[in-house]
Length: 212
Image (cartoon, rainbow, N blue to C red):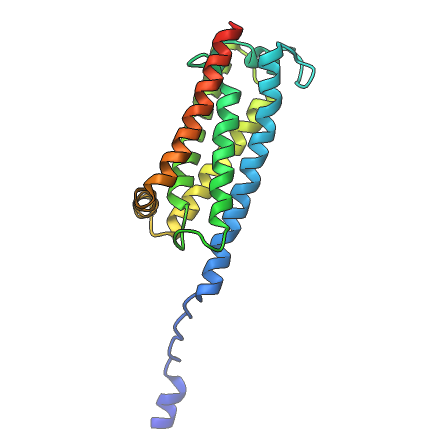
């Protein structure tokens, strides 16, 4: 009877082995690499829009045929923020996100999940701005910019990857807490980066004012 009971008893479930630190690191690096690629793609896509706004030219863009008009969107009043063309802000934002993603791939990154929180915040902001511009360009101008749509898709992808990275770090709140703690722990480096960003934006605003 004991043999029969042993024969018919369900086999014990084997515990799922925990992911090793090496596997966890590799799983974290993949979305970081994708974030870097997407941020660079967004930077490259913002460049022709910046050119179109600065030169009022559509040579690098699709034509103004209805319902597609990249030049219409790029040269409209909707493409300005504080007097600076939105594509220029896009260059700054995507450049910053690319730098963050690259820093997360470095061996001497501040902590194991750096910069998941900052990438999520940046991706979420880019996605929100992109969604707003998509609605405004369609409602106010009645056109759809194909290059802009590609930028919007990149922003959505960065948001999704940022959420995945933050989830791997223990959640959005935890990821932001870790990254902001690291930023506060290095005030001098943070100050230099902020001054560089503010200086770049100031130069862009002065340049736009001189052109107007």
